[in-house]
Amino acid sequence: MEIYKSESFMVQHSEEQLLLRCKKSLHSEEFRAGLTKALQYAREHQIKKWLLDLREIGKLSEADETWVQVQLFPQIMIHLGMKNYVAVVMDERCYANMVDESGLLGLKSYNSFIIINTFYQLEEAASWLEGKHPNYV
Image 1: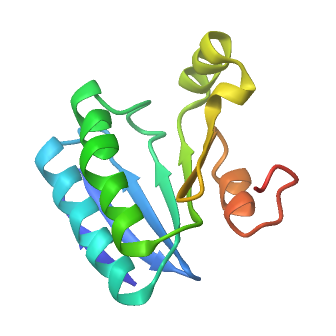
Image 2 (image 1 turned 90 degrees about the vertical axis):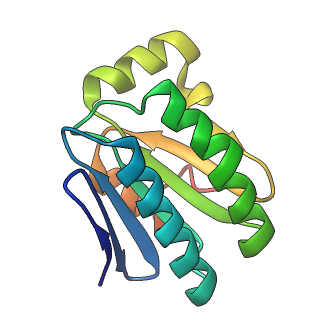
């Protein structure tokens, strides 16, 4: 089910999770509007699994990443409670750079409210969200 669609960002609901996909020329305004719609939908339907596909853009801009950390994640914690899962999928080059910088454990983040894991393969991320991956928290 399509929740939001713009030139550069799309949000869909599928099988108890939200799929958020960035397109090559991501516009911050559309990205943030789409995430706001996704949060509203997640609140209404208690969706606690999010898959953010960044493969076409590599990674978020620093400003958008900050917005997610400061605006979106606190709202998820307030309105959706504990055990929200976010799988971030980036292109393989960016993933390899992050592994070099942070190590594999640096690609994961966990608190009782939001559990984040980073991938470069969409199928592996989807499997993790479904609880079929060995590293599922």
